[in-house]
Length: 357
Image (cartoon, rainbow, N blue to C red; front, side, top):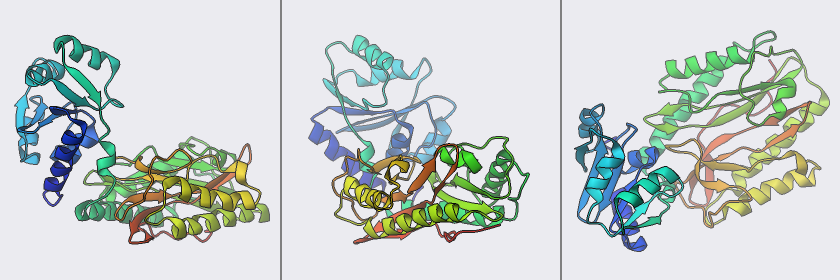
């Protein structure tokens, strides 16, 4: 992880400390710990103030932390993370915490042990939205692994093979091609189960004449890819093809409207209108996309609820419209996309024209 721009990340963090007017930031969310320090273990925390940077961890991780976190003082705890945090935070008057991550019990413990200290909820995830060159390279590699696995899995899928078998083979292929693990629980939804946007693989057997939606991703150096393809097993009906083509048209249009300067809401609305004009508005039940990086779902969001007012170059998002018909089936097509100056570049390259096996 030596090629990542840690100096730039820390500079942004110090700006956050000044803007929030806190004495220190307590960082406990694992992806944020990794992002700012390089450390990839868990059960740990960062303390960052104007004059100190500490990584608090336990004996399982001290050697690893010393190797991965050159810009932090490594502090080992032996009697519990939060007890050590109390010791290290004494003297601070106002502490920024990740309010969306910290539990009530953790907050109550700190408040009790650090009487008189003010705690302020801060948002750090947005500092990870714009990717540096090393991050982009890792995500491109994760995308290439997923593309290679998809190419191979097509030889495996056939009638009477179960969804679970497809998921297992796909995850094996990704590991074989260099993935650390599956990016999330692999979705394989065939036939009527395609109407479930998050229909994880079951023991259902794939049948001839069905559409099969496969949503999966690889992880390279901690960074994720996310891709969905829907394929046909055997001949499908003209109505199924009509639905597939509607989703494909919307997905390709999404690549045209994902651009710098637009808001996440506006991008989602533009693609949503394609479905509404085609009479499928009620069948698109989720947002168009989400950010991808150290988490499979992160900022920015492309949805009705997006808080992102300005899409910026080097953000990486998904473009994943889908249509779902209860007890009938569904179609989703998704690419991981790099936002460049004024346009979007797909990083996943598996074919999107309908594949009929």
